[in-house]
Length: 141
Ligand code: THU
Image (cartoon, rainbow, N blue to C red; front, side):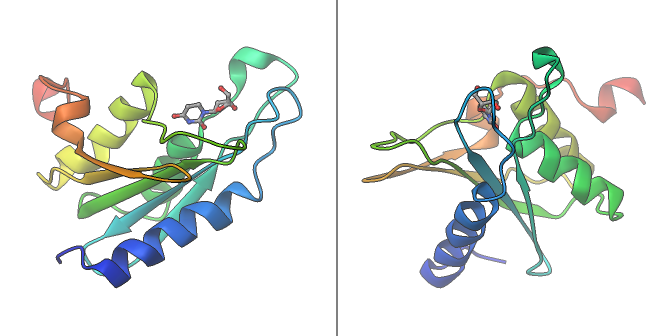
């Protein structure tokens, strides 16, 4: 499915709504992520921190785990990610999250468009640009 304006707006709204549930007592930096699949489904995640700081999970990673846990294996069309800090510039997924997103994308041979949502700007970058020469499931086949 293509990413028309209305769909893009719906995906961004879902990421923003997900960030509201972020558990961020340590960073106070809420992040929301929303994954759009080719059947129109949207699966969201928020960052989930831990008193043992290094165990904290990013929003995109939580969304990927939810998607895989619900049986999704590919079909990833687009991703929106948003940080809710005041005056926030667009944020791109961290390195680990790029790798996590690549797993779902690779299973369906898609190259999802990543919408990096800031207050004044949406930066649109294909995952393959964020993570070129990715290691993926096919390397282990
Ligand atoms: N964070 C995300 O959720 N996604 C990213 O792509 C970058 C960082 C979270 C991790 C931590 O809870 C907070 O933002 C500050 O680093």
